[in-house]
Length: 407
Image (cartoon, rainbow, N blue to C red; front, side, top):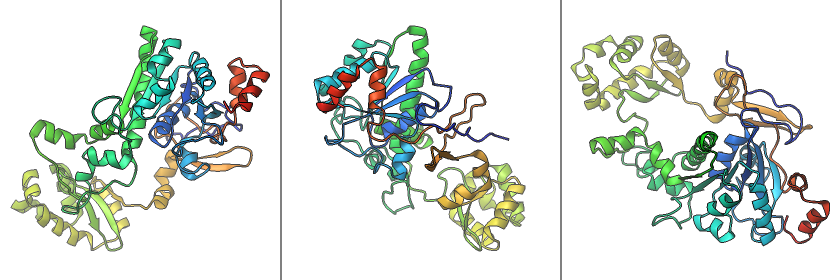
């Protein structure tokens, strides 16, 4: 039995999220979604994350993960401490450089030119800490003809080819229901950071990790991209039908819909028998994968007629018992109520002094150093004084920073 994510000890941001990355300090300059997604991957495994925002009353730019305190913000920014810092002032930049001198990682997702204009680009900070791993996420890359364009998930979904293969045939472009380019760019950036930290153990040197929404989306096309690159095929919309594994798709039952994946000759045979239609195995239109692909519409119609005879639960049970992949199609509330989802601990509860919240937990299980939710997102600047004291600033200096709106 897999263990659910380990419950967090009571306490705030001082309670470590986990031991795996606890030796690393991360400066989080990110906003919106791709950057916070990256940093969350580090924070949940125990990295000491300092989330840096502009002081209240100054322009904060785009919202960082939806309205502060809302579900989206809560989910993106747990397990961090909060510091306000005016990076438009020389004193704010000086403080960031002092923190960067002792940090292991910095993550940002400004437009490419912004960090250099502020004097906090990779070369600027590597000069004060050659061991620093500096991660940048952008819409289209740090250079090239589109580098200056603003990045947005749906733009990347369209330019990355995803919307051309999503939806029903002839429907026109369709976005997927999650910000997949943002999320994947963040996860890939976190992977790049971990690779760079591992390499640093050999070389002793940091480096610049770069990814973009466009790169992430193109990579996530996976076999659909390979169809073009390797075989010259331009994939089209296939709706709920799998484009190459047939029959795989959504089928209407007596009381709803289910997914069935009966691809490959062995599973196809098991499916035909479990469906009570052994005659399909003798039908020349369905004799092999190529035939089933050529006659997809006729095959789907035959399956639809058969599947409509029984309920979703009856079919899911019968097909899985026969070794045929099949499953219900849940709404999100139904998904979280599923016994296997509960068993895996995908929803993690955390109560910090009576402030109970439920978060989406990490989808990875480590046997010795599991991730955990250790703290709710910080209030803006909640730990500013604490972080600056740790960096060696005096009470008078901190008071002066406040009076000048540096923090």
